[in-house]
Length: 276
Image (cartoon, rainbow, N blue to C red):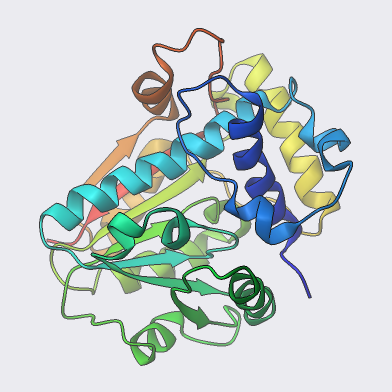
């Protein structure tokens, strides 16, 4: 068992941002690369092409940085629980000891890849967060989370990055309903893919390439949302405070002063929803 293909690709793109792109880096993350230890030649893979994938790696680091900034902001308000749903090769706990020392990090993911990650973290001497193995098809993930020490009576940040496209609309609605029952002050941040008709020609082509790669890996994209649809879904689930964060605003926030032209590709936006 090793990391899933999608999680590995994301981790390698984050490393490429550090290895290829000019500083300042939006996110400094080579921990995933160390965990994977892909061997010589990984940068020659077609999905690592430095030019054609530049927008994807920029989008990946932008969304991760946005979540980490949100965790820091909430930690300053006293929130001390951070849950990563579908954690994959998330490396927050290893890279940000300043924040991981203030919030308890729970990583929720499939048992096999998570056990592989635990082994690799142990081998390399990294901090191990609270790992919550869950078979998402069979187990109520929130029950497993509580059994691992999560306190649903205290607020938390819940992050779901790069997950909703692999879930049916019903599954996402169920997840939203569960989180809406958590303690007031809990903040959910969830990325979602826009439907192709909302994108320009270049972004549509990039989305089609991503969709082909996802199908080939056995993890096809199942769901796309217009911003008003995801806001309505969150509202129906019980959230009263919902906000749509366009991907373009992340580009303006983190890439505005760059001289190398690096910009995130369009097509993935963010939902921020708060339990009142």
